[in-house]
Length: 284
Length: 143
Image (cartoon, rainbow over all chains, first blue to last red; front, side, top):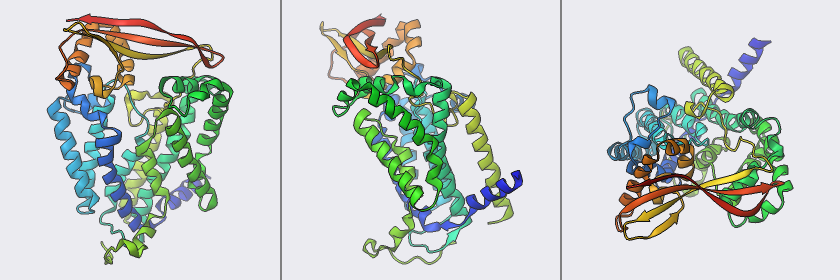
């Protein structure tokens, strides 16, 4: 029985998927790094202005011989990361540039999260950075599918699902079985509510109902992996959840949201004549 | 794909999944990226308190300004200062680094001669904010 389950999982995880989707994912994800560094997570660079006495390295930062984030280290890491991401976004040298970007972004995250706060919207994005280089050359208009592309895309998809699914268990572990009946969202609105959200503190029952809704949503997240209407509906729900969260408490798990692209048939973009991409010969 | 390619990927996948599960049930934020996905996981009591840290900066020209904590003001996020709150309370001289960061980010401002870290506390009643916020000093430092 266990062997049957393992075999089914392996067959699903390695089922061939379009290589072109990898090319499109690479372009979006590597270009997103620029958005991340300059716009949405721009505060990481500022850690270079802060004394390294306040650097409280994560486990990975203590275990690996990573340098203290002086302003020179932060600057150099940033430049190297952006150069690597620029090259990787063009599709050239995907294994080399992609691996460099994965390692540099991981260090960038250590610099980000070693000052007292760890964010939880990066797991799927990091997985994406590490699996995308394993596919080799990919072109946006390539027409074949491969097991390598299938595996990499499934890794990203499963990482997205696990981020939602395991979050419920973190709530049970850190908040208790009665997490949903508490004032977690009320606290969030008080601390960082937008103008759109202020009225919510007058309706605590609605916030509690939303907390129950979040648990249902998270536990149902494996539905994202189901083909057809079920998967599409859940994907839409996931996007709506993030939009509403942003509008009410100004938090958007953007690196995670970008990984939702792995669920979309991006390979169809390459077939859009308006994009004017030159025909690809099948790459190795 | 070669058998070796498939095997390496299978082992890598299984390893990461197992480590992630261990992280969720036994790990901490420290184990990023394999730590628990504990965003908004703690439960706040309906009769609890919501706190938010702020800084009060005293300048050499006599100005005293209360400011929010942000990467733009002192190079760190509010949640980061709150995450290291114990350290600041135990060693208030660490506030010096926030003063230094502010001065380096705002070269046009007068020098800072003192920093006070305070908590702004809102009481909840039945899950909604009630009463006026209360301030409480957490740590002070003077140059």
